[in-house]
Length: 367
Image (cartoon, rainbow, N blue to C red; front, side):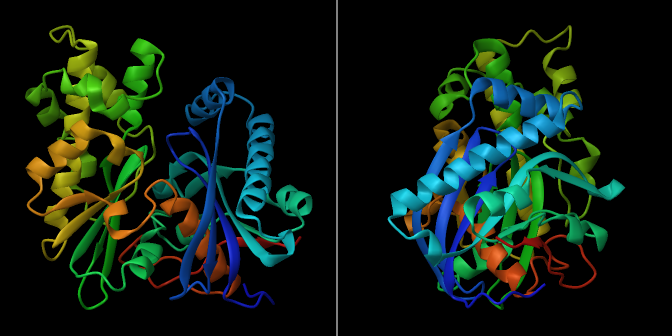
């Protein structure tokens, strides 16, 4: 796919991750290569009813058409709000990268499903839209995820290598960047999804704020050990995960008749599962990183960050310490990937998703 857009240009990226908490919108000035200048950003939360509908669809229940329409409306709202907030004219925004909301990811079956009406969005905004970023990778034998590593590499071009970037959203994934330009990436285990679901089920809150519940609990190390016997952890990278991959296993572990975990002990045990799975990923890269940068909502969890610092043999810090925006990194990445897609450039590599050769992706919808 190639377009007549002249790059570098202003591009808006949109992301709604597996935590299903809302829409991140970020403005980026980029050429899809080395030019990366972050601009304003905006977040629009999902209300409780829509979030419940999204999570139900992930479990195979509900009306995808109606949810997709509602999601599209909120994404359009987010773009309009961001344009106003950034004080830029609509005409200067060349492109929108619209990831959509993943409701199923099963690349081993050739399936990855993101909800959203890209053609309607392009018409409503009067701006071309790139969507469906993952399908072409899956069609070419890839995992369809993670797709952000090329953006990590562009951002980190001046940073000392080897470097590890860990994104902790609903699922956790890692990007390892080598001194000679190597990029290795893969999903490594649960992020915050299991913990969020546990907390919501017991308290009605969406997450464990700052890890306060886990900090008061005691980790059941035996359950963590049983969790780590899941076959996913034995698979070679590249590999990727659906949000619900571990749900049945973890529900069975945490509700065993011989285990009566309190709210706090369950939170502590789930937090340990996430941290330990991330730590295991360091054995799958060629060399230990000199620094570990944490992005995504998980970096706000002080208990999780403390566990990572204790079990990783490298300095661990939030991405803000190198000037990145950990809340908007993925939205920015889909602006960057939209610019690459519009120029027919690769979005994924054999070492990031397992495709046989670098492939582009995305579908272009004119305004």
